[in-house]
Image 1 (cartoon, rainbow, N blue to C red):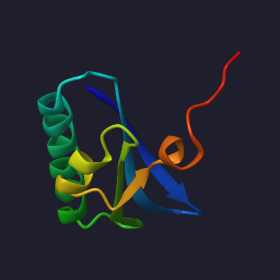
Image 2: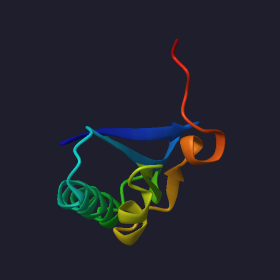
Image 3: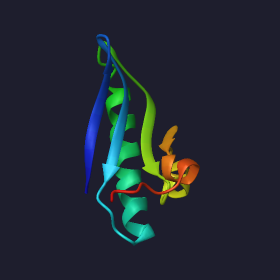
Length: 88
């Protein structure tokens, strides 16, 4: 459904980031983001040494509203700010 990254800052894991494969269905994103939030909470509740799980990065310009509704604390909205990239 998506790609999971566990970001590591020095020796402490700080947050998870999900990159979801594009799908035009809002329901698809809602399910993916919900599963990611639940995974983040499960990991946080295990109280693993050096794992904080205090941030959840998911959502981009096209789907950030859904990501925020599902618990994102970091979103990536570069296209909304800078416009679409020119790959020519």
